[in-house]
Image 1 (cartoon, rainbow, N blue to C red):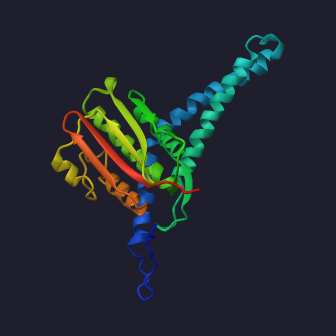
Image 2 (cartoon, one colour):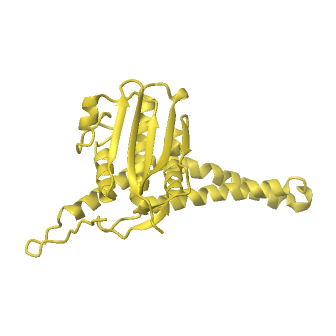
Image 3 (cartoon, rainbow, N blue to C red):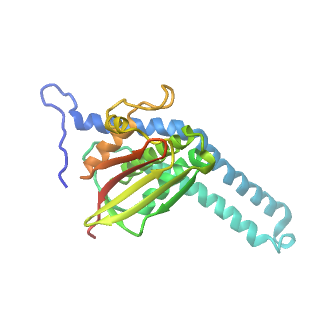
Length: 256
């Protein structure tokens, strides 16, 4: 894969576009975390409270008095704490700052990146059926933090499209994966309001948005495009207005 070189101009000291793009990508991550923080706090608080109550019950009643229920209570406590651990790990991966666009790449499981994105965005999709069919396990080569960011953007956009259609009760998001040659293609499809051909042409323009002034900056899909192009791939959109939208992108399969 060809990497983009970017350094400071020796005479002016100004940072060239690659560094600026990396900063923009990181700022977009922080903004998304701010928007999602209330929902994520709720996601953490529920299993935490349940775990605390379970531990208090064990301390108060003791192993002997709870003998028939002891194993079940311990299992529930462990499950709640594991959910919290997974959310925290997902956030650490997502919020990791890439020092520049030429960051060290690694191999990772597609399923892990998708699962992390789905967990992080789950407060926004609580009334929508989210289905994944990835034909896993497959490893790809790239920056896992950036790919999680792309997936969060696409799933969030899909959820917004469903909510704007006012049919969230029947809303559905499908995340599909398949291999084509040495590439792995991920597609996020929703049954939301769809977009017109003209909107598809415009949506990768920086600052373009179909959302209200207070719900988006228009940076999301242009950021996604920049990330996927850095990985040597393409991002494509298909849609029927009033019916559905499918956004797909491809990554290189890991050779080892």
